[in-house]
Amino acid sequence: MKFNSNREQYKSSNWNPFAPTKRDIERTAYLASKSPIIASILGFLFPIVAIFYVNRIENFLKIMAYMIILSFSLVIILSIYIILNKDKGYEEVSQIFDKCKIILEFITELCPIAATEENTIAIILARKRKSEVN
Image 1 (cartoon, rainbow, N blue to C red):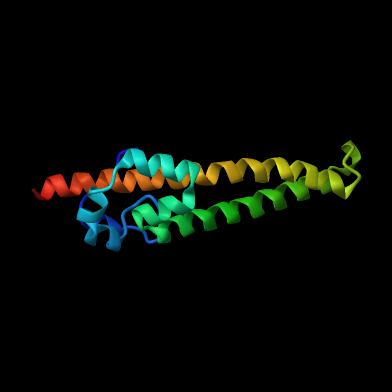
Image 2 (image 1 turned 90 degrees about the vertical axis):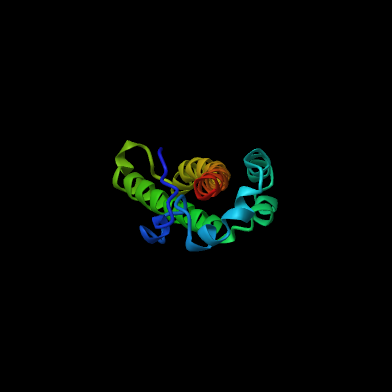
């Protein structure tokens, strides 16, 4: 992915967690002073600590909301599929939860990875903006 670090990017989409927010643009010097390596390690191992390190809870909450919506929609789709195909061996409701558990575990692992990448991209774009200004 190629990201544009210009000052007008935040106006493109308020719901895109990977685009810099207006607050990120205003705090370019603060974000540029952070280390992307430390933010990546903290984001993957301790997501809450990474939120405080980078001080960007808004985008983390956007990612969490997207993951929750994705989880519910996939569970509903899978449940409907299993119910419609009862004749293929899915007779018990407990089998629906067994299949959905696998999907939810995968999404649970995917969320910290997305949050980590988002924090790293924000720091790298802040450094790029700072170097463009200077």
